[in-house]
Amino acid sequence: MTLVAARECVLVLVDYQQRLLPVIHDVDEVMQEAMRIADAARDLGIRVIGTEQNPAGLGPSDPAIRSRCDA
Image (cartoon, rainbow, N blue to C red; front, side, top):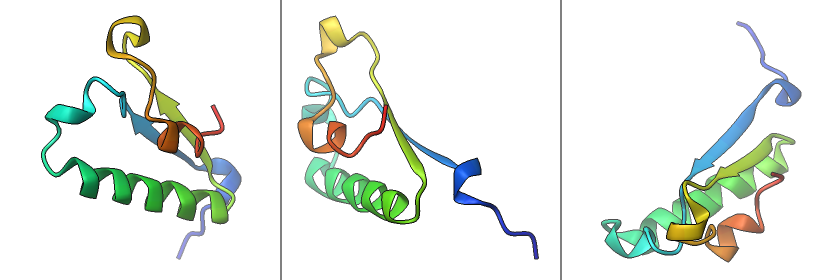
């Protein structure tokens, strides 16, 4: 069995932006799962990165997601 060190891992949360969220099916569940996974990653020492496509047009990432991101 091969172990992977937390410092070699990263969790990327893609486009949890305010204007995109209303069109996501079951958005409340999706957001809860994203936050749960981000919290677990951080607890394990895994870096969390959030991405934003066209933030000027689509708005910033949701504050609950953004607060869990290292970058």
